[in-house]
Length: 422
Image 1 (cartoon, rainbow, N blue to C red):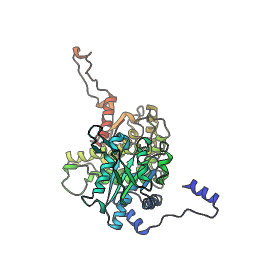
Image 2: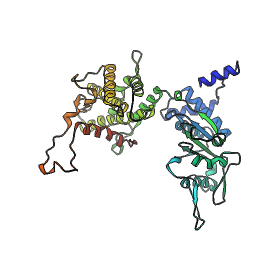
Image 3: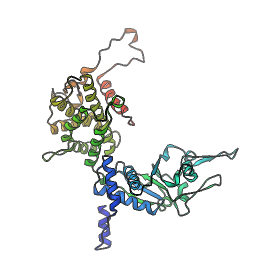
């Protein structure tokens, strides 16, 4: 951190922050990053090496930082890299402590029969201690992904300190083995108590650990390897339309020497605007990925239905670039007002050089046809309805409008990719 370095230099003149060095582990970290389409930047690798240093010293660790700054990715990358270095396999158990009550997390004691029932955390710990399937020969990391609320975190205080004991209401005590780590993954410490914080090793992940360009490279890498065909896939290679689509939009995503990235410019604009919910870079890029995936599916389906005339050349160029603008607009401004959508659409058209068929309409008024890659008004795709006179006042009658057609298409892309929606 720049602030930390400045303070250190001011208080201790001539001192500097020593970087973590472990050449063998660094090499494996970079190898894991390549396998999972992650960018092994120096800041990212250093953060993983710092996490490794803390995990070696403490059995309770806190990973603190905003959403989308690589906390989960760093934990999983480190575990895989350590496995490649020493050959010891590892398991990660992710728990959302706010999704259940304290009894479901730690267990409960029946007041009548005095019978003890393990909770999620205690059952994992007991499984490791029982060692029925060789658990003692593997690493076990339990990740609590959620706010460190005293309601549930205070029960871990005896586990996190040097005693390493979990005392159950039944009177039983469970010790923490040496191959067991408890990782608290949070965005801030505003709900945590000093008792919990003081017992943990701390690793801070700042927003600049992962840049937007790194996120885009990871996103494109994942899209190029996504199995679009699913059960219809008869070979090991991806469909030609998938690679052609990504090649067509890559210059706009990453930019070049003469122009900046269209995604970065649009993202900066969207984050500066007012939304219904506070926008984050991670959420906007996740929704962008879902809509881009829908465009890939349209291109692949077109080739399947037209084997003699697949989507190539100018046809693919037109469809892919227009779909990219469509995906950016509805992923970055779906939760914003219509005026913001219009301003973002104007920015995208101006930067990309793509023209609309009619200047009286905005980009949000058009959809992209897979048949020829041209624009089509959403209003032209609204089906005509004929309602019998006695059904006009019925409460279950739904009149299809431009907005229902448009929003159904956008929501369908997110639902098909199994994204949570609000």
